[in-house]
Image (cartoon, rainbow, N blue to C red; front, side, top):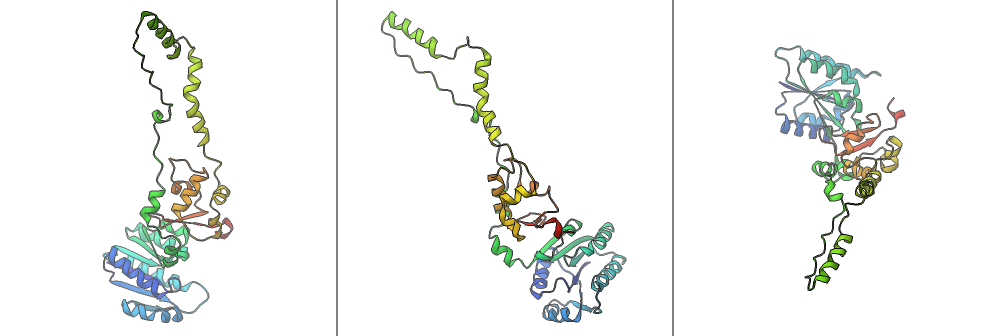
Length: 296
């Protein structure tokens, strides 16, 4: 049995709820139990979509505390105690207050999903769910018209070049002209002995010439100091707090030499989980920056 419990005080747009049901039915199958919790005002604004999808509304008391979250959590735990237990529970809210509930249900073997509007998804709650579905993406699509495949393709590590390609190309020895007289043959031998690579030269003289291009290229591609300030300097658009294209950010980091050719931008940004959010988690296409003071 699959269950969808909607926090109407958080997922409070009819378009978001409708989009959530369409995505869930296409990817997860039928959802027999459908409930929405919230104040009478919020449930009234969702009346049309709740009627269209046959969702049972549960009106909550209009109190100052988060009583809607508690009402939803109580019903979720009651369902978890049924026999047989639900196979999947979907929480229609990006609120991080549900993380303890999600962890407890997941420990009981229930697959946990989250549906949230992009800007309302709590960053610290993402890892608690087995899957996160973001709805209301019209603005995000306008900001990043590319597909997830395009973003990941631009973010792939650049292939390693072989040392043979970096090494200077040796010139083929010039063909010797046909000798007409013994005197000319002797002269040709003298010229050849001067132009061919001499074995008499010390090894220390030839070695630096062979390795100089590699050393110079290695120094040129050495990454700069990596921190949040350096990333923001390389991609100033992140400071707006709006979601930015992962493909564009990856290119900017490579141009600024903040990531090497063999390191993806995704791996680099995950070193700063409290500053940069990569969404969606399964195959990120956008990056959002949040200052530390806004997280605590």
